[in-house]
Amino acid sequence: MFDFKYKLFGRSKGRKRNKNLILNNLDEFDFNIKKDLNKALFNILDIGSGNGENAIYLSKLYPNARIITCEIFEDGNINLINQINKLHINNILLFKGNALQLLDELKKDMIFNQVWILFPDPWPKKRHHKRRLINHAFLNYIYNFLKDSGRIMISTDSNEYVQLMFNLIYELKHKYKWENQNYQTWNYEFLDLAETKFYKKALNSNRKSTFFSLKKI
Ligand SMILES: C[S@@+](CC[C@H](N)C(=O)[O-])C[C@H]1O[C@@H](n2cnc3c(N)ncnc32)[C@H](O)[C@@H]1O
Image (cartoon, rainbow, N blue to C red; front, side):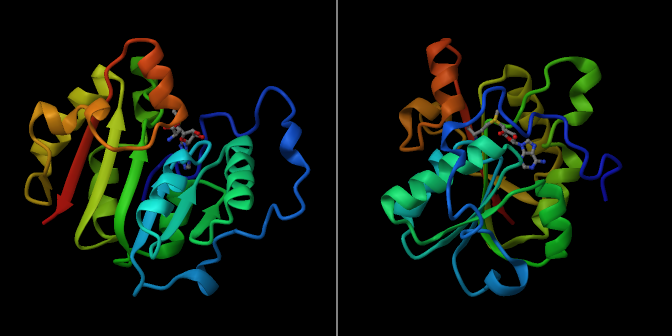
């Protein structure tokens, strides 16, 4: 599907050794497609879940939903498992790998009620633009995995990514309805959303974060 299939550009391990690495249940919450895929559930996919703040937030907001996180960054996954242990959360499962691999393994099945991608890596340099996760092909592809009226939620603090989103929304207007078309509803600060690490980073640097909610037509 993608010519850069499964190639990873970000960091998968932290610079410093994670002091929380010693966990005796590192694999307990692994998402196993054969065992854990249940289309009848309210399924939420959180791509690039980072430290897991959004997954934790969603697990409380939707206690009956199944939240599947997808993250290549080992320290992020460990932080999330720590929180799952601490808070006794029972509706989050982790896919510790590349989202594109997970999607390929799921084989274009209409599984998800919601797909979240908060603060995808912006790759600002022009020569790196093709590394961006979100593009026309990706939004077209992920459409196949959404249930009827399913939603994809995206946020970014990169002006360039916002521009890209506007272009994609226009190009794909026959596939997705852009639901939050005014300032009050696209300004991340005004919304009840998870305060993720990258949202806080943006806030501390006075960068505005924009939120997009796209509904499958
Ligand atoms: C800028 S961080 C945002 C993390 C988190 N969503 C937040 O708001 O704090 C982007 C994350 O996406 C992850 N990522 C990038 N490409 C990915 C892919 N193809 N599959 C899974 N995770 C990916 C990176 O490892 C990184 O942790």
